Image 1: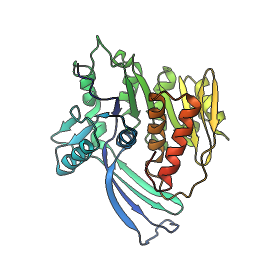
Image 2: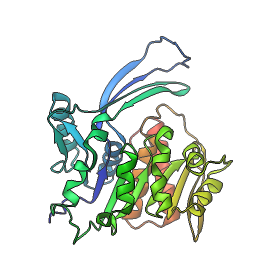
Image 3: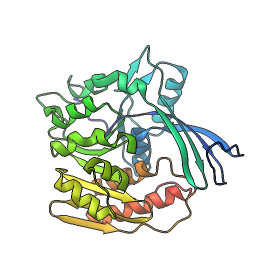
Image 4: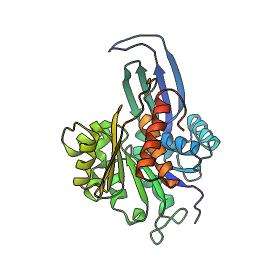
Length: 297
């Protein structure tokens, strides 16, 4: 079987269309700014950061056979990603995400991941048919997983023996999809990367700090939980204890993709041998560089 990547990134790979302005925006605002299109989606954002840290990610996702899909795959290959195992659909278009960001942060966003949801478990075939793994030889490596997948598919991943040996790292796509991660609490699988709001949704509670939230997720069944809270301390909890650190104070110029950058930097740090404290520090530093307008490093 071919193991030609350092980590599998499973989930949304799409085009981000983002409008940014330097002024505060209100509902109904019409202001000057810039509109850009760039590769995005949670799995893609994670993969791009992993590539910058020297890892070679493999993508498991659904991408259409349209012009947008061909351009997206070419961009991924240009960043040293393995795209051989991507599910290509003849009748599903390439997904996309649209966001508006102002000086006051994310104003609004719409994620169109309908093709990924419609593809379902077809994106996982390489993990069952012997290409990357099989029922007799489950995939043994790192997997970054995002909550754009359907609840049914996430439930399958949380319980399927095909993933029994994998080091699962799981993130919601947004607060609106946070409860899709409940199977990983129920079955005690994987490490969850969530923000304070998402932790509250998963636990049906309100938390004042990331440490409180991370510990609550572990009590609810999480194998490990890393909770962020903007410029406030972030916390990494296991049954053995919690580690917390405060992010650098930086000028925020962009927010879309910040959580994915944080998660990828943390995974890369641990893959290189960093302990929990070092990994959290490296992830917070990478996220700070990203939101202030630089590349993660």
